[in-house]
Figure: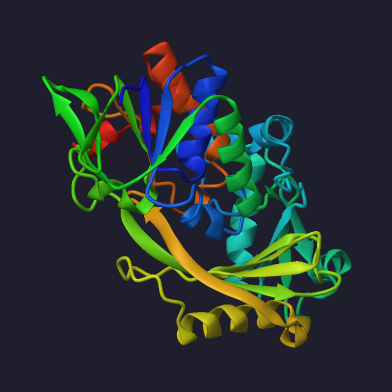
Length: 367
């Protein structure tokens, strides 16, 4: 089989890169996926676009997240037009809540450095917090409002990206990718179930499995899985209007009344189980944050893997192996970084050079 670009991984990253390549005029794009597109971490995320709420300090990663968040409204609209699927983009804002003096001081520091960057971040005392979100526990001392953060529905996003890519002419094939094939210092294609799919360019977007692909020129532990467990509750209506963070967890209201609570961060390899301890921690945090959730029925729970890198930065752009490009290692910010990643990696392939903004995330740093 002959292709111009082969993409290993049919999650949101792989499908988004394929769609953006097709929109730029690239032909013969093939996405290789071992199961249904979007069936792994893509569809199991919370969909938080928390560029500010999830950042501890100014950094190149924050800059990338802010650019990607700013691109989301137009990206979601274009995707709806191309696929017919509404991905649930909602500029609901996010709030980080403090339950202790130490947490309040941390939020104050965050407000200060974000204000220096010209970002919107409003400190809330207890009264202002309860006025915005009456359902939050009265034990809360205050919070920090990030009005520009947002959310999308990851499962709808996965479906929309796969449909948009297919309608743009992208070919999807299911099978087991054995290895990236290279000779003479450059990529020649991908071996799929003992069949060579020849290509001049290969994009590795296999999430937590990326470092396991033979021939990908990645150290064995360059990308590792971190398990995250999630719980979905049913409420009518949802008790919150914002995504709310507390400590290491969060509660995400959906417009239809569902509430997502998460999440654990567990380095347990590829063990995908949902555990009693994980559910207890998530539900305990959710009920501490919003006491009325104690009466909400549990409608679903699941787990999946976030692709983690040692330095906390994604791997984006051309690798040292000519013709091999990476779009992986996004950890907790995969959904947020879809637009920026897809546009940047597509630009690398079509224009033949990496955008300057990708320099901090170059896969070459691993060598």
